[in-house]
Image 1 (tube, rainbow, N blue to C red):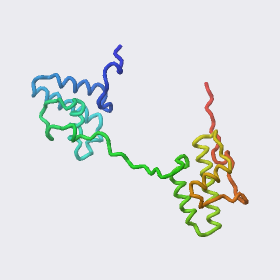
Image 2: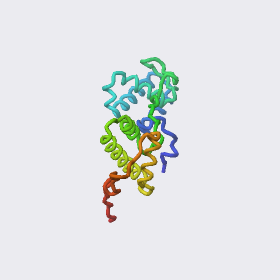
Image 3: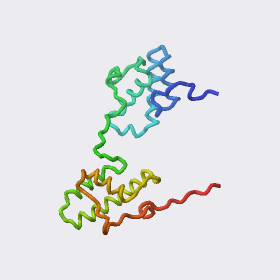
Image 4: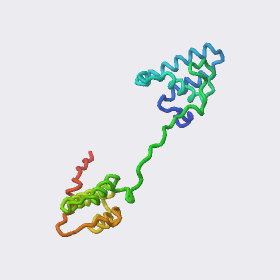
Length: 193
């Protein structure tokens, strides 16, 4: 049996092994006219696999670029958009910047924003309610992050103090930290058949 692992790496897996084999076959054709006809058939197959590409403005050029990549830029055909150069074709998108300003990523970036709001709040009663809300969300996030870890009031208070650079603290008098069952409802486990 011919296993896929033994057939070599797929250059563009989204097109599949059959298209890759068609491209490899086109590379072996010596007659240029015959090779061009074969490539046109391959291009039609590629565009049929992804019909939504036809809605894009430069979809034909994109398919030709993909063909060039799969042939390792060795295919000698009549390129309608000029002979592709590996340096010009960029496969991977630009990396997206992710805000990493949080000291404790398991709480999430939104907690940082909520803490900034609480620090800037002038109304004492509203500030107290906001701190209570933040502490309960922190506890829920800790439970989601790892259900087995310590989620005591002291830990939440300490983490809140660290995240706010000492500007916020929890007054345990009149403060309600929700129970675990209130924050994370029990999930039903499927019965094994």
